[in-house]
Image 1 (cartoon, rainbow, N blue to C red):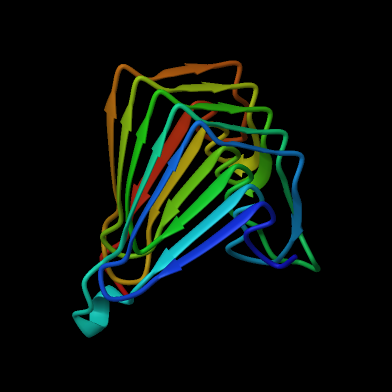
Image 2 (cartoon, rainbow, N blue to C red):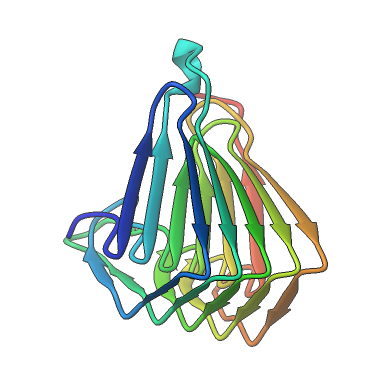
Length: 171
């Protein structure tokens, strides 16, 4: 699979998705960019003025998912990749996921929002940045993670073992 090895959700026109008590594990994606080995969430293009879709995940586990490079690119999001969306994660665990960028979660795409509440990131790994979470505000916007009572432990990366955050306001 090129993206969304376990689950692929694509929302347009303010779609709303909800997952509760779900386990997404042992998936592999081979890709040179946005991977989301466990879960890929992709929604409308903010530059067109289209409203974002939302995803709520509660009491779930994303574990042992791996995003591998196809050729020379860098796959994002071992556990989950969020592109141009609004995501709320409550009481969830991300464990032992692997990607080049954002071992557990990659938050990218202009003006994406990820609200993390009472969640744990443990044993995740990124080859380059964001072992637990990689936040890259690309595509002309700034992505925003909001963390409340979140634990990062034993995550590894070249930069930002627990979390790496960088924004871009260029196109």
